[in-house]
Amino acid sequence: MNLPTALSLVEPLDRQTLGERAYAQLADLLISGRLAPGEKLSLRTAAEVLGVSIMPVREAVSRLVADKALEVAANRAVRVPVMSATQFRDLTKVRIAIEGHAAAEAARLRGDSNLASIAIAEAAMRAESEVRAPDLPRAVELNKTFHFAVYEAAQSPILVEIIRALWLKAGPVINLDLRGNPDRLAKGEAIRFHADARKAIETGDTDAAKTAIAADITSAANFILSRGGLSA
Image 1 (cartoon, one colour):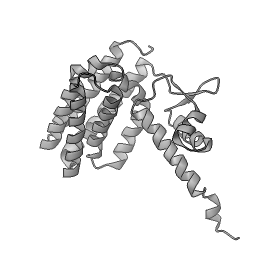
Image 2 (tube, rainbow, N blue to C red):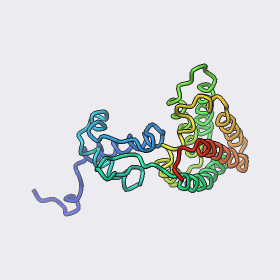
Image 3 (cartoon, rainbow, N blue to C red):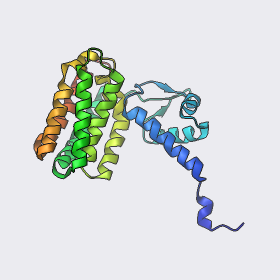
């Protein structure tokens, strides 16, 4: 069979689709903080859980290593990088600048569907914080859902893509703020800042929206740094 030259460079669709799915699901584990710094990732186990062969997982992991969201240790084990306090502070500054800008844009450009998504996400996390024994992994997921509902409202796919890249690196660390720490959730700082951001976006107050998201990021970062779990 004679094929156009360009088609000879195209991978089989099924394989490409499975690789994209594996990448998206592993990336979401990192962004949502369900993988901790230093945690090892078994390619075989990941393939079994995702219901695919090991090849799409290997391709996805290679992409995540290129993104510096995963790393290959000296013994060839794949793991989540361990971030230093200095690196975390630097990443936090960048997040405040970019995510604060996204929140301001959300206040300026949000549509009705965006307002509904933000309100639902904010209410869900607030409700989780008020139960006697909150589901902390769910609270972590709800935190991510709220933030990305805000960023989607900025109406900029490129901006959301940049923020997702930041969260790939920061997710395992920033979610130490909530994961395994019910006192932090009960304290309610994140809940208050989320409510402030929602109100600012609803009223179109760009400065207040930027301030609320920056305060949320700063508060979480300060708490993580105060625990001394990151290397110097």
